[in-house]
Image (tube, rainbow, N blue to C red):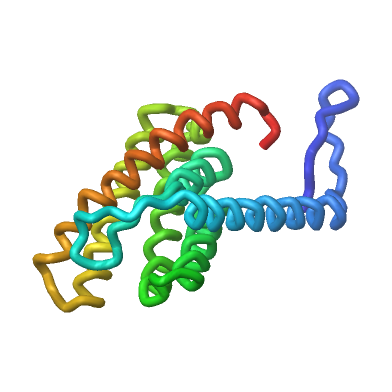
Length: 192
């Protein structure tokens, strides 16, 4: 891999990018992704509210979705996909919702990836409020549909899982209300 520097009166000087620089970037990416995964898990585990509107144990609202939104808007699709998948699936594995873990492991990375892809499309870099909202809505529709189908598979009923949809929608709204302003603040710091 090569980087080009503009020097000496218009001539391009070529220099080889060291392997150490590439390794540093990989290590930095792994650290950020690991921290995001831990934050998604903690936000999901720490602050959660059981809703009485669901026919099953799936009526849960938590701030993990807000942390996933922050990951997607600040760090992009790949880190959001990994942190959402691993962080929320770990929560499921360490809670009464163990049966949901394999489904969460599929639903949440797609949600994070789609959200990050839309928010970062056409050079927006997660900085357009309108496109961030569109990203959250589109990925939220995926999440709602994914967890609806999960309920159908786990409980063998097409009608009863409809009761879980308002709770899933509320979770996205609360996550967006927390995630959008926090993402904007983090973006302004220029640390990431």
